Length: 164
Image (cartoon, rainbow, N blue to C red; front, side):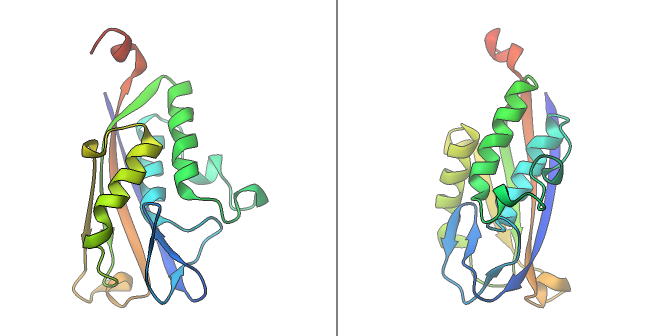
């Protein structure tokens, strides 16, 4: 078994939808980024890449490549799952935290978990998403942007073949 850690942060910007965990959240601004700027999916992807020893998002999906402009980050998570499988690993579970002062995310968390789980090829109960604030501290507290942290556990595919 191997563990990976992921982090991502994006600045708020007007004129874009706010996408977290593949879910569009009603809010007056979205996040700036080359893809859909889904910080939660990016953190999960980074954690999975780290656990499989495959570098980071920028290495595989550079923001200089027009093919990734506006792409759904859930698509990227699915591709990362394929990269991990090619390296001999599959996800076991994921735990993630979104850091945002606003908007309130609790009503959207179950759907975020379902969508991330689908992209990861996992049952929804093996993907945990939490949300917290910084009580007004830092860039998230000043409502300048949103950050997300994630950890992923992977196992070698050989364990699955052996029934482990």
